[in-house]
Amino acid sequence: MTTIPNKGRARRLRVYLVEDSTIIVGLLRDLLAVDPTVEVVGESTTAGKAIADIASLVPDVAVVDIALEDSSGFDVLKALGKADPDARPTRIVLSNFATERYRAEAARLGADYFFDKNGEILDLLKTLTAIAERDGSPSDTLM
Image 1 (spheres, rainbow, N blue to C red):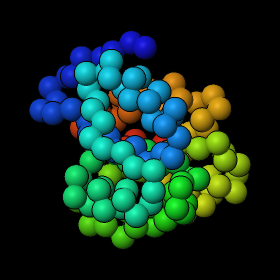
Image 2 (image 1 turned 180 degrees about the vertical axis):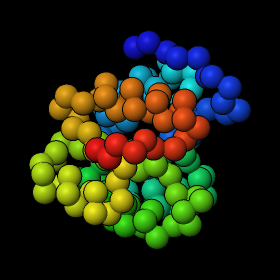
Image 3 (image 1 turned 90 degrees about the vertical axis):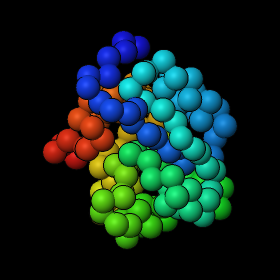
Image 4 (image 1 turned 90 degrees about the horizontal axis):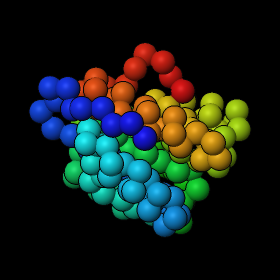
């Protein structure tokens, strides 16, 4: 992975991971550790903990899986949609359930991006770097 210097950004992009697979969390942590523009500030395997943590940690980005231990990533997206817009993170879905139905539901609930775990993890990483360079704001291109 090519790293891009932190072009004038005062701080690194703060990312929160909502993922029930320890393997995927470990992979994402390892891949993001080499990018100086990004830092993982927390993680959760459940919607309830994720919602509470995101409210208190106020990350720039939440990467959310659809299938979680206690419920669905859609519950996280719903809760984030109700948050104060100034404190609302960019919402990225990373899922094995990359069907049009799930993509449409994620978009309806406010997801800014949707990536398939089965082939788009590098696209996720490139997107996080691009968001970091734009000081945390998503692009105009949705999913």
